[in-house]
Image 1 (cartoon, rainbow, N blue to C red):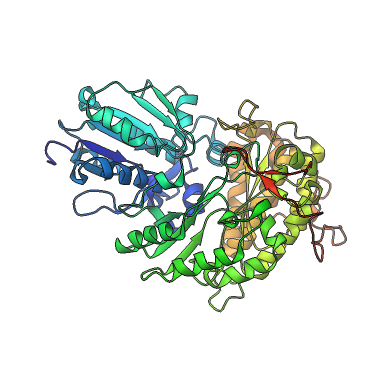
Image 2: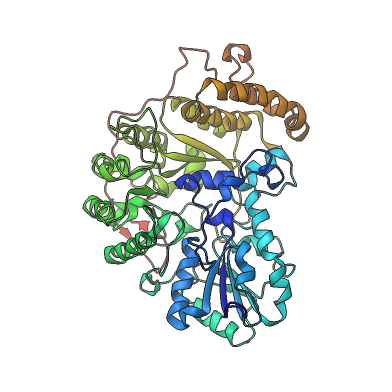
Length: 561
């Protein structure tokens, strides 16, 4: 059949499939590097993937594996091939009826990717966008285009419509949303040669419709929840009610991963602490402990990794993080000398801090602090990171610059919070606000690098100074940055962004703070400068119940933040 092609071919790019250093955040950051400079700075190795003897991909994103499992219920398994673009020629042929493509971040216009590639030029294409274009413009697809249908879906499918690329790439059907309840019908129609709808918009399915995987996913990803319900206006996931997969389903997926050589399991969720949660986002400590211990006990599992979590539950239930640490820390792949673990391991989890401005927090993301009041958000952040650090959890935090209506005073409040966290054990990634489709802020204007103010540039590069000092604090790396920063500013930075970035860049280069006194808002050279301290204890104003209407987010009864 290989000479004639498989009837159904599923594909994903290497930049979305790589298991680089078993670190999803490093994978995402490397994908923001401009494709033009990737080979120059030696990041090609970040695209390494593995292929089975028959040419199929050993691992691809979890979403594509779910599609594969659904199709295997409706079609003979030998009809289906899953591969990277470099192996498309082995599976696409005269008998191919449909090619399905996974699109996670196909054009690089999400919060982080759209920022960091543009530090080198407005029109530069990031690695993941170049990889996706290579897939869509693959010669084998053009050669057989007359007899096959092209279906593209995934969390980044909206970018293709947004940039008007559906027709140039010849996409027959663009699928947006969680497509489990539509996959089989669309592929069946494609196999029969029927006309497909141009675009399909999907609602969240019931978890019962999601099958156990047939094969290994990148990073050994296993979904434990979907949705959130906290209602942040810049995020579509937060507008969907949270649901938890049954433990039996989760463990069966873990066994599939380990059977195909995965020794690492990544528990994928919009919020770890929403797993089997109680009313009012109350974390379920026994269920979470059972989940982590059960996954770690599966034969073949050496490492357990976390994805996303909200910081509020760590403050609401201070003993929660400690109780989860034997697995979350003890089975982590991450190590750092600052960890007090016997092997210096630490747990890393994506945590959205987003802003230190109470005004902006209250306006756009007040559910993130529930059941604490929005006015308590800075205290929640400080106390939450203190609790996490004490238990060797070093969060990867995100902060958003340029939220709609951000004023200088808002940026100063974020800088004050950042200043107060200068001794924290963490990584903090500054991003720019990007209006995402299907969010409440989808029609708002996005932030642009060339419009950043002096204060925003200071926040941006102070974050990266923290990261360099904590994760890359060797003398040789300081020298590299000390020399590289003025070269970058002279050749590229000043021309693209003007003088506003000059002194923040010098802070990144470790220029002595006393030489920049009066040039920046934060004065790190002043030993007496006051900073916020985490409270000894933090309590929500009261316990409230919640109600859920349809598939909407949970709404605290009587809670009017």
